[in-house]
Length: 381
Ligand SMILES: O=C(O)CCC(=O)C(=O)O
Image (cartoon, rainbow, N blue to C red):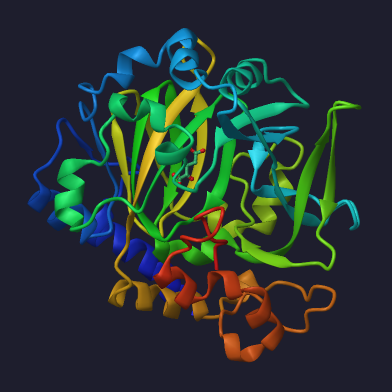
């Protein structure tokens, strides 16, 4: 099976994505028909330059005073900020209950605060305390509605191509510490950078086995104002979530171990790599795995808005589920305490416990969307 799966990775690149690790760049927005034919239907990313230079946000959001004025007129108006010790929210971290090498899935301490305080925390982030304003729950249209006139409510050529308005519009204000670990989303994503730069690593859904998706115990950071320190606690009773195991930028000390643990990622085809600058939009197709880092503007922050459009749960989605269900020997996961099955397989009938644990990411939930959830993102199943 190994050979057939590796042939698939190559064939997808030869037939559609191209053999360089570059993402195709368009110098102006495509017509809806071209966007649909060449990118959405092909499930192929592209960067569109000169896409949003007409937005007032491109110039006015470069100063704190403008943003503070717009968002701080009412002292009771709060925004959600993700606090972590290292800028890595929704990422793997050492499991406080396990042996030193075991990992858990750590979510940020989410705090609601007035915008001017959020901006201060973002600008003054340091090792040990990093703030990232982000909430994938349509936050731009709710928490940040005072900024609505500075951008477009949707991306007109994408809306026409996709035949619907965005399901969610999210704002992200981070700094150079902020990093988003490899995951995928069940949305067509139009990701617009307003200030600073975002650096993406992308892998197509066909490369799913290279991500070593495994089950990790869900944990949460909590921040104490009194001590100024974070603690990380695993949920009790323990709940497992599926997440990508690969850290594409291991430290020099862990590099050799990571390469030997995740050879399909490190020795396989290079991921697609791109930097998205202010005024540009990345089309990030549904189901693509992505890892995101950022370089700040002169004010020390990176601002982006993304438009999540519903994806089609069509034959491509069915093929993806089939591919993921194929047991790939080298992605075998050792049995976790209390979980007597192999979670690398997605054959739900194999294990009732897995069914129970993964209900969040069941097809039904994906198709319905997670409108009622606080967070629209579902774990990677
Ligand atoms: O900008 C980021 O940090 C992450 C973006 C992302 O994951 C998304 O748009 O789905």
